[in-house]
Amino acid sequence: MSKFLSTLKQLLLAFDWSLSPDNCLFAMPVMRSNQKRLGAVPTHNRSIDDLPNEVLIQIFKFVLAVNKDKEPVLRVGSHGAPPVNTSRICLITFVCRRWRSLARDYPHFWSRIDGTKRDRLDLFLRLSRSVPVSLVLSAELPDIGDILALQGPRIRRLDLAVPPPMAAMVPLLLSFTATSLDCLTIAYSQDVQDSDRPSDPVALFDSEVVPLKALMIYNAPNWLPQNHFPKLTHLHMGLRTHCDHPRISSVCDFLRNTPNLTHLHIHGIPSLRRFTHRPVPAAPVSLPNLRSLTVAFGAFDAAIALATSLVVPSDIYCCLDHLMVFSDGPVAHLPKSPPLDALDGMTMLQLAADDHILHLVAESPSSGFWLQAYIASITLSWGAWLDDLHASLPLWRITTFHVFVGGNRYLLFSLLRHMPSLVELGVRLQRDYEETDVAPDESVARSLYLHLSDAAVCRDLRTLKVDIMVYNASSLVNVRVSELVHMTTNRGLQGSPLDCVIIQPFAGATRIETSGTALLSRLREALTSITHVQEVDLRRPGPPCVTFGKRQCWRDGDFNEYWRLNMMQRAVCRLPGKCSRELVEFEEADFTIM
Image (cartoon, rainbow, N blue to C red; front, top):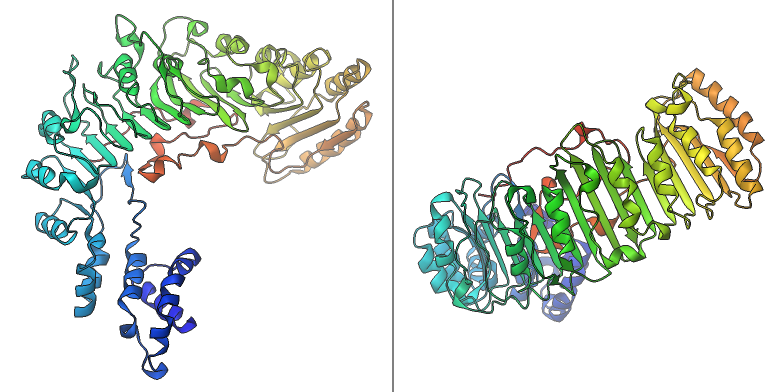
């Protein structure tokens, strides 16, 4: 058996492939079933040619990465959809007559193909016989209508690229019988002409009910399917921010036909300011099975309106990412966070905000709310909107809060006064406001300590972490030790002492200067005067003590079952407070997959 595995690995290396431990375990039942046949072959003459056909098929599967339970995914948002890689199966057929015959007699090896070479497409369709197939085709392929009509009943996945000349033909092309279709991708070119009016209702596949499990409409035109999708679980809609159609009301009408939807991703939602009336649905849309909702790269007002229109379960992860605020009026008049039931159980909050950029992540063990938005106007800021955050987010439930507010020292108190249950507070400070030559009234640290001196603010607070991000450790920072000592003493005398205080004046620094070393020594001595605190920790330069991060739950692994999103379509964590505008790329990108 060990000699067989050695031969198997050598073969796979020849194909530039690897045999993982999981694949070895998967192959074991086949090898054991053929062990007697393998043992009957004289050892000195044994070679790969003596392997039974069943074992060779398993080897071919590993080389081809064929898995009948999961089709290869399509990379969406790249500058071109690469053709299906058929080089390995072709290489196998060139080895010898036996391998060629064996591979050609196994239809699943020929079940995924593109239309870049018509003769190869015809060959694969013929050799795949009657097994389900996955096709990557362009709508301008000659005779594509005939191909779809003939192969339709056995198409399991169809990725259809639509160039501008064929945009109007898509409903006609998708009128074939699709009894086996699980996944459909319709990717329009960005050059498709926009329409100033909605189209007539379109029913795909000449059927009222379509058994799709996954659907993507990329660069969506002015129509959406009117079918009922009782089995649909994954939906990705790429809208265009500069188009009037489809409107939010049309999107919601479409969603009413997807009762079992679990993952929804909408990209490029246009602002409501484009319309003379607000195109929102009259009645909410119930999606009782939805587990993840992502609305990205669009307008802030429309994203909030859409999320507010949905009735979703409490164990959902709602991500509103890369949103732009287009407003001529006060930001305080913008819509608040959507009234999600998931917000009620959240106990962890991360917040990074400056005048123009906001990144907020609220989480519970089984749900989360993510909001990242940018104000386009230099005359507006997030201050007023965040002042009213307690009206839409249950801040009174928050027990862990990590925050960066730039130079907005008033915002901290505005938030903390609504957090009576807070146990751990981590504050990231910006060096610009904590240097030795900064006026006391401009220091965020000083403002923080003054507000916390009143034990009525965050009365359950037990752990306080404060760090100052710097590039090198010098003596230019002022940690406001006197105000810190005053705060800890007052809280202790008022019956709400802190258990732990962690101060890190040189967070993120990779080197320390002589002046920085001297400052640390002085701080260490000064902090000994702190009373009513069980533990005081002065951290040396290194990784910040106030941590921000993106948990695994926010990654788009579920969508990767059918599509791979590029970086410009994924939720990007820009916590903590390096929230300068140059770090956020809101420029329009090329998302075509033509």
